[in-house]
Image: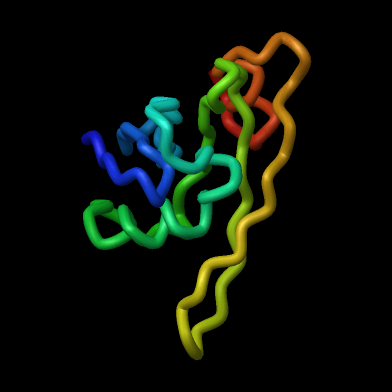
Length: 107
């Protein structure tokens, strides 16, 4: 699914499972809006209602505007369900497989 907005990151995303583990893949389309890295909270908040599972059940990997895959961890409070993200630089090769393994998944 593609989301475009010049005040936000322009992204495409896909939710699926890999070996039974939910994975959310986000790709920064680099179309002049904010970077996905800088708009991660806003992006996840916008797509959250469209996800088939609770957002905190996913391992999240994303490709930044430079083409490198990184990963994200989430924390939220039950009071306001606000998301707090932590961005993690992926492995030096920048591949999705390496980022997925770093996030705790199996390839």
